[in-house]
Image (cartoon, rainbow, N blue to C red):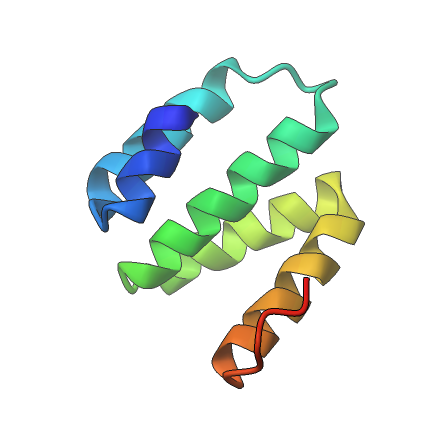
Length: 88
């Protein structure tokens, strides 16, 4: 997961998506925080690469695993889009 996150920060989105996908393959289904975070990160990388359908699928999976995380991510995305200062 760490390499995928680093690649995302470096805007190497193809590598980030691949790393996050491999991490999802080996992530235990009982580790809800990690699983939902991986889906959220992969959704972000897919969205940034204009793979909207894949991003929506990952968001749906993330919502199914951890609905609270999707709400937090949506709020943070809204604040970033609105250029609101970081209040978190």
